[in-house]
Each structure stands twice: as structure tokens, then as C-alpha cells.
Length: 114
Figure 1 (cartoon, rainbow, N blue to C red):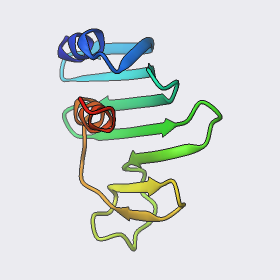
Figure 2: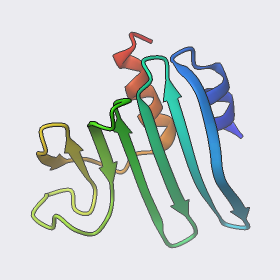
Figure 3: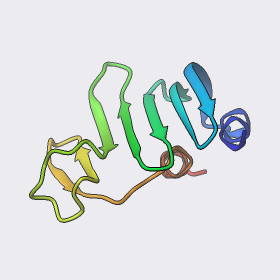
Figure 4: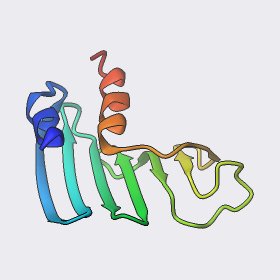
């Protein structure tokens, strides 16, 4: 699985825990907790099948202060990119696009200069 290779090879990831993983013909569900070298944590959840995709990527500091969250929960209908949106640390909700765990990890990696 490509995501496991990324988790194993990323020097900014301290450790990770696959909390749940299911795969079936045409889809998957995964729930992962990732701890970075600065002790911040990413809680990642993705579900996908032939007709649906849902995700939530919640990144927080060690003290549980939110850094950012991206998801496609069907609320915030005023956002142009509905249902895709991002919650910022200042509590603003802004436009976003569909995003994968791989892309989120790459964005977080850039904050570590990687």
C-alpha cells in the first residue's frame, strides 16, 4: 500500500497507528493516527467506494489545539467548494478542494521543510 510506504519513509513522522483498515472490491476505509516529530498529531479518516468518498484530516498540537482540519462533511453550504472545506486555527472556515491523505502528509511535510 502506497500510504504505508509514505508513512514509513517520511522523516517528519515519529510514529503512526493504523486504528482501523478495511478494503473490499471497489472501496476502502482507513482510520490512522500519525504523530510528527514536533509531537503534533494528525487524525485521518477516509472512506471511498464506487459512489462515495468522505474524509476528515484533523491536525492538532500536542496540547490538542487545532492547527487545521480538512473535511467534506456536508455543512458550511456557503463555501463555494461545498462540501469541501478547511477549518483554520483561527476558527475561520475557508474553501478547499478534495484532498487525500497523501496530499495532506505532503503539505504537513512542507512545514518541516521536507
